[in-house]
Length: 325
Image (cartoon, rainbow, N blue to C red):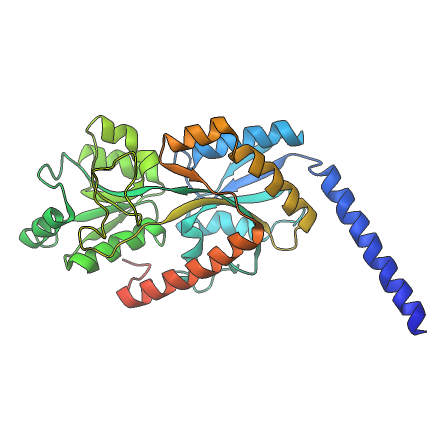
């Protein structure tokens, strides 16, 4: 009897392995929806469109953007968590993905258990910037702090959405320099930037990739790099740490699938993206925009998600940041 069960078990394993291989060989069998839980026109768009165009060319099926912004990116993220785990609905997200549980305790998904990471694709340089129209004399964080103390309650900070990474940076900065800063929430980075340029918003954090064209024309002024090291695109811009302020805005771009997606499909996507991301023309393009290609294994990406989730939880609790700020 034991021998019989052993043979049956081995047969089932063999069938599953063959089925998984066949699934990966045939994948994708229809258009793939790439859900972006951010507003169109944000810092992820240009880079993401390059990847989807290349994936479509190499895998033979359309990769279609599905923008689903709102509720701190949780609407689009929840949509993917509920999707059929067959590789035809994927999530393209940024570093804000690991923040959500700390703002929304009743989320219908778990950032660790509800998704299978595919890969990181890039890390991004980020900055703290001010409006030259609204704050013509502000060039450093010290200048900003002095202005805030001289004008209590007047400073405001634009965010790309309540409960996201830019919201945390605003609140953490306010705590670090001991000056009240009102968070003004937008549905995306592009809308936020329009109002900073116009002078309706004083400051914001964001990616150098998104802000660099406006910095070059003088419409935005960077006052601190928010990564551990300076960006080689703005080598004279001191980091917040160099200015004595413990505020950081690490962010990345990564792809995830609903939990339960066959590993063979995950690995196929990972392998294709590795070739695409590290293609010389893409590396050159990213380098010119302060973006670093960092394709990882699914396991390495999962470890980063776990570590960042714990880090943000600690910061949010220590700073007393709430989703209603």
